Length: 391
Image (cartoon, rainbow, N blue to C red; front, side, top):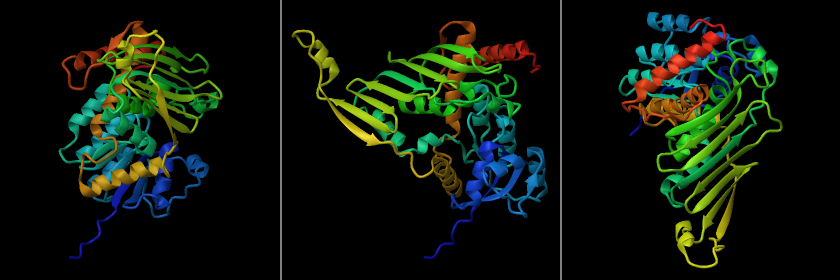
């Protein structure tokens, strides 16, 4: 039996800054079979030139997202999906507008500034509509392999995590060239909210959500900005596992080293390789043995090459296109419910630093989530006002 091929997903890119221009370029270059660029907004000629992207003369270009949605309402523009790549303080409004029109949404990270924004977006999603986030690290084959290994419990439960990710180096010009960066009211935060959502999403995807944090965030320590450019976050999981997450935008050459200690093994990711140690005996058993006190388990090491795949961004876009064509809301690498988790972690870290105390992270949907959202909203608005912004 012959079946007609599925039509391409007609997609608009809302926000043609750095990442939006790159996504549009991938669609125009045919790197995402099954997805066609149908329109763009907020075009930045400098970004087009920087990334070598030439828009087809017939491509509809709209000044604002509102103009684009008005064209959809009038029937002048036919769309199936949008990629939301605007500043994070606009993500909720643009995603909500798309969902009201039955358009599928792939939103760039983070979902917003406040976890409440991600929750509202999640709750507003019409049943069956495909929506997801651009957490492209989930497309890395090596991370998918580690996810399967950790969740199989082959090496036991989590004992400790230590992630130093200080290779997010940025110059002062990075903040000066884009006026919304480095401001509490527009950017919403600094390195934790802007650079690290990918790392924090990966942290919770691999190891589960921590339940408590104590954070130390340093605002404008190295750059002339309002928000933090260095942070150290202490983590604690419900089962007693602990962790430390360290990040900065002003260390050179910087480090990206992830250690995950499990009951019966160790995972170390650094410098283009992944090393996995498997103990020959359960550590708990060796600990209880009589002897000299210096016995220890032996470990067999396995080294894996760092495999990010051919292009994780294109892989994430292809995954989203396939989900839309199949009408499968559970297929995206990071479905709509996932955006809330990394924001809960970031918001809790900020709240902890501002208060100078340990803060509990509510589970999504828990009774204490509303109180947490309100506490963060008050504290974040206080930061904005202290910097001279009206919110």
